[in-house]
Each structure stands twice: as structure tokens, then as C-alpha cells.
Length: 353
Ligand code: AOF
Ligand code: ZN
Image (cartoon, rainbow, N blue to C red; front, top):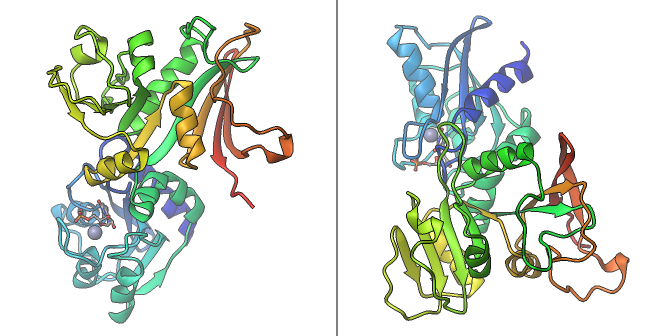
């Protein structure tokens, strides 16, 4: 039996939940009996049935007997009573013979206990199948549940000579259409999008996700100086939710907007964690991008390069006072793409020695 083949199919199922399950994990399950796939399932939306149960119930609907069947599931079956009863016990009850697991559940409430239950009831268990791919798929969930803060990704588009805007703060049209379309996929992937008050006022962005069936991320504005905003700014016109973190005591009512009196970044992340916001796409400007870098709060960078030169402009990061290349903050590329004449790089931090 090709375990990796079936696990890959379970991963494909899990991916159907992208943009719908946050802050839960993306989970997919495949049930196999006598070498044949008899059922599939995935975690469809936040608070919904777990992937294992969806696959089991899909089989039951067709009166399929699950005794002696094998399950391939991307995440360790849970052992806790959460919004739903534990999946590990359900697998025992249904008489599964074997369970192949992609990755252990980093959720401290589960973490190995699911496997323990299965084994105690004589089910054959193997785990860490296609583990690195599944960990990448659930990087948001893993960071959120283990670090108790949202996953943080920086995104910016640069000219070939390394500027995100001209000296007059013009940043429109650096990247091309294809790159900008890809950004909308990112906005669907992350649950929130964050910018600074200066960028909000200068660029007047919409910060919406414009792909079919896409979800608008929650819009977060960092405004430590308590700026005044024109009520006609696009984000106040858009559907969805705005949260402005500000030290302003002004009682101003903006549409779809909540003003939270907090400007300390660590406290802000704590508040976002408590509100179940599992991920942030930080779209600038330089002061905000630098803030996350300074506090070592960057989990990923998405950068687009355009073949344009302007000679002088705004760098994505403020002066970090690094005078030798050997002291640079380093990242490791994990993905690259070509979007017509733009280059795209996805990077993760190198662990600092
Ligand atoms: C999911 N979907 O398919 C699996 C999960 O709040 P609850 O009860 O939905 O439990 C969420 C936890 O259950 C989650 O953090 C993870 O540890 C475990 N497994 N969760 O949302 C699934 N299999
Ligand atoms: Zn479960």
C-alpha cells in the first residue's frame, strides 16, 4: 500500500478548507478499505465537524461498514472534548484497524494523547507521513497554538534598486497585474491585514480580497499618534471589520470600526490572539515593517521585485544600524515564482546563531 499516495490525497482534501477554517487547522482524511478509497472528508469551516468525522459520516450515508478500514488523516485525531467529541474515540468505536497520521497535533490538549488512545485500543498507528509538507500547510495553526500569537507575514513590492515608494510616497504600480492578483490570494489566506496610519492616509487602500469566493481579512491599523481620519477613506466604506489600535481617546465613530486603546505591539498581538485572529499580513509602510523585524516577530516575507529603477526612495526597512553585511538579518527562500516580468520570493527567517 502506498501510504504517501493516500496521504497526498488527504492533503488535497485539507487544502479545500483554505480561507475558511481559521484559527483551526487545515485537516483532510481519506478512508481506504481493501486497497480502495471508500470515503473522503475535510474540515470545512471554523467550529464545524472535524475531517475524520466528515469522512466517517460520508461513508455511513452510503451504508459502508467501516470495521477493519484504514484512515489517512493529515493531523493526529483529537483526544479532547472541544466543540465536538474526541475523534480518536470515534475511530475506536467505528472499528478502524489502522490509522496513518501526517503530523502530531501541536495543540497541548492533544499532543500525543490521540495516538495513545488509538494504540491502547489495538489500532495500528503510524505517523509523520509527508510531515514537512503538512507542517508547511499548517504553519499558521502551529505558530498560533504554540506561540500564542498570530502568524506574522510581511509583504512588499520593490523596485529593482530596493524601494517600496518614491520619495513622494508614490507606491502605486511598482508590481504588475499578475503579482497584484497573487496578493489577493494571500489576503484570502491570512485572517487579517495590517498597515500603519500613515500608509492608510497616504494610499487610501481598500484592503479587500478581490478573488472569487474570497474572504476579506480583518483590517488592522496601527496608529500610535492618534491621527485624524477622513470618514470617506475607503476602508470605512468597505464591508468587513476594521480595528484601529491607537492611543487616541477621541470618541469618533467610523463605520465598521472599533478603536482599541493600545499601542504596545506585544499587547496588541495578545489581544489579537485572544480574539482568535491567527494570522496577519503586514503590508507596510517601512516603520511598521521595521517594527516587526526589530522585535523578531517575522514568520515569513512575501516580496515582489519589479524591473524598475528610481534611484532614490523609501526603503522597506528603516535604518537598522547594521554596518557589516556579516551582521545582516538573514532569511531563507522557500519558494520563488516568476509573474511575467516580476520576480516573487517567499522567505522564512534563518535561526540566528
Ligand atoms: C479541527 N478540525 O479536522 C481536526 C482538529 O474546537 P474544536 O473542538 O473544533 O477542536 C479544535 C482542535 O481539534 C484543534 O485545535 C486541533 O487540535 C484538533 N483537531 N480540529 O478544527 C479537524 N482534526
Ligand atoms: Zn477531532
